[in-house]
Image (cartoon, rainbow, N blue to C red; front, side, top):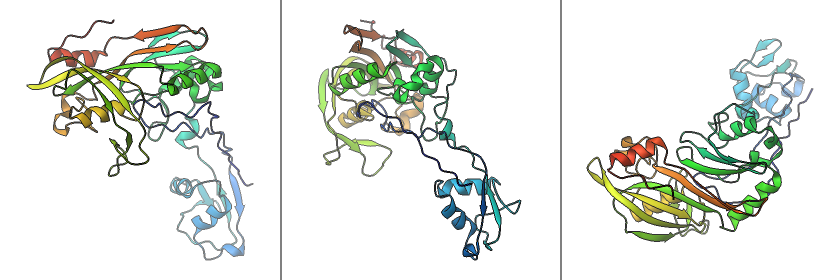
Length: 345
């Protein structure tokens, strides 16, 4: 039997760049492959070749790296015995390959994950995401994500691309996110983001004392020297990025000046606030990627929270706004700096 596997990618309502704090790649492979054993009868044409090369040619629907994992795990048998990829084929063997599910094949499995739901109706859900929770499955995080929790809490989201997610927060950024519970609601929310009418307000604690207020209008692209990072850039691949900021209060942390800064996004590029504040010379406290490396142990994550979210309800058309207190660890951090948490207004 020859196995053919065709990944099922989500049909997206709109392509959007509004990824907030992490890179955007909304096309997922959604498992569903037949994992029944595959029996291959080798012919004399295979004689003298490496076994892994021969098998790769017979089951091209699987990558060579995945086949190698199956060899290493004893899931490729030649005449009933486990084989090695580097073995030589003789051309008269019976090979049985037993495909194994990859972690990404079960990425869209519902999982019971506690969700801090700020608002929910039949059209939308507003979540207060804690730091440490990954928004959606990806390399290294194929389970235990917000997406998995959404599918458990609201099974109907299995019929909505990306389980209704329209924008994201980085794993270590806390705060408010909106989810569309229907395709119509999700599409409307994406269009609001694209039109820059969604109000997103963040609080960040930064090293130093920036001026009282200002606007950073500086395009962002992948860092040419480190592909994990983003950077202000004039490269043709850079995309417009605009952040408005206001210094709320200042204090001292580890005898160094820090400031609580309120940031409002017009755009939502990857790591936008972190990159823009670093560009000004005021890196976020705890930011292990863009911050002061010798000071990152002071706080185990970037001190950043999506505190306020405002939008037009996709079904009723009314203006809606939600605001949440700072996460406990963030509130404790600014208290240590002698800064009082602002009122919820």
